[in-house]
Image (tube, rainbow, N blue to C red):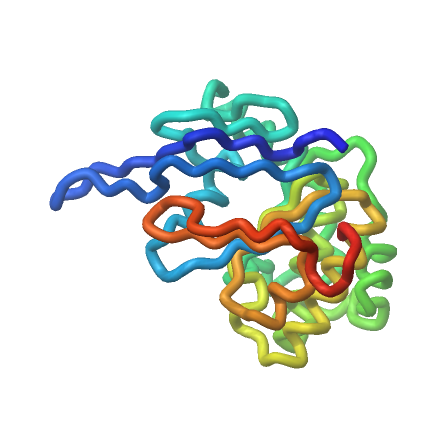
Amino acid sequence: MSAVVDVRDAERQYRTPGGIVHAVNGIDLHVEAGECIAVMGPSGSGKSTLLALLGALEPASAGSVKVLGVEVGALSAEERTDFRRHHIGFVFQDLGLLPYLTAAENVAFGIGVANSSDPLDPRAVLATLGLEAQADRLADQLSGGEQERVAIARSLAHRPQLVLGDEPTGSLDAASSEVAIDFLLTALRELGATAVVVTHDPGVVERFDRTVVLRDGRVAAEPLAPGPQGAPC
């Protein structure tokens, strides 16, 4: 397998009234194609900033961040936008669904933003996630768990090679969280996509291949043993 993510000694600094903040401070991370990685760590450890670097939302202040072999920090702002639209799917705790659109229309909207030349059929993706009957319901008429699955469908429908999640199940109860993660991992396996997901839920972590722990902007631990599922996602 080839590396989808290759981060070496990456830093991300922010200038604040109180001085320079090192949100990411020398991170190394290597993720192979098809792996599903869980990222854990206390508040302020750099988890969301790491996702921003991998998602080409921000450039690194120093070091190297390669995604799909591309040094994303060397891209212009316009090139980064184009890169993430085509190659990356996002699932966040704040799902960002458009309430005046149906579930199927929300997924189709995501495909349009990505300008994908070979997208999945929105209704087929929703059916895979157990939402065939909800395809024509408005987003704000769906339950929290159903909305989460619509957001997952939207993140996958343009066939991204890398999916990034920032506490995607943080607002769900334990049962709904387990269902949503099960659907996400199943869909990732079918697409052959790679995932890096920030979570605080040990139950979610157990489903992933590997866990990376961040502390003070650095990788504090990186267990190599796969999760109980025993196979890449």
